[in-house]
Image (cartoon, rainbow, N blue to C red; front, side):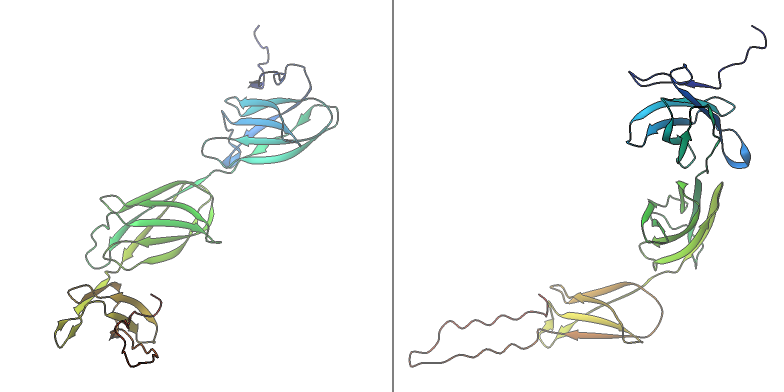
Length: 276
C-alpha cells in the first residue's frame, strides 16, 4: 500500500541460515557510507561469529541501508566490502535489542603517470614500473605503453615508492604520496644510461675469459664482467663521471709436488677467477 516502508536491505542467507531481517534473530542495521557520507549501494555486509562462522549476509540498497540478523546476544564481527573501497571489519556487541551501526568505507586510490626521456622528451616504452610501500612490500607492477604511460588502480592511500627500470635509461626511484581519493598523477624524466664497451687484448690477440672490473671515482665497484671469446666486455646504464677500468687474467696458482726418478706425467693445473 501507499506509504508502506520498504525493507532497509535485501539479505541473502547461506543455505541453512536465516535470512537477515526475517525475524530469526536480533537485527543489526545501519547505512554503509563512503567519502563525504555518500551512500555505497551494493556494498556487501557479512556478519560472522568470533569463531569465523558466517551468520548472515546483506547487500545494501541504493541508499546504503543494510540489515543482518544476529542469532542472539554476544559479540560479532561485521565485514563490509564494495568495489572501489577498502574492506572494513569491526566488532559489534549485541545485548538483546536491535543495534544501529553505520559503516564508513575508505575508497581506494589510483596512481598513473608517464615516463619520458629527459633529453629528447620522447616516451619511454616498455619500462618496468614497480610500486612498493614504506616497508618495501610490493604493491603493484606494470609496464609502460607506447606513449610511456602507466596506471594502477585500487591502491591504499599513503606514501609509496615508485621505481622505474628501462632499457637504455638509468634506474630511478622517487617517493609519491597517493591521495585519499581519485587518481594521483606523476611524470618522470629518465636520464639516458651511458654505455661503456671495449676489448681486452693480449700480445697474441683478444683475451677471452678475462675479468673486467669497473670502479667509480669514489672507489665503489660499479660492476664486473667477463670477456667473451672475442675479448669483448660491456657495461650499461652508467651515469656521467670518472671511472677506472681494471682488467685481469687468471690469478697465479701454486702447488707442491715431489718428483721421483720416474718423473711425473700427469700434473694438471687449473686456473680460475676467485669465487668460481
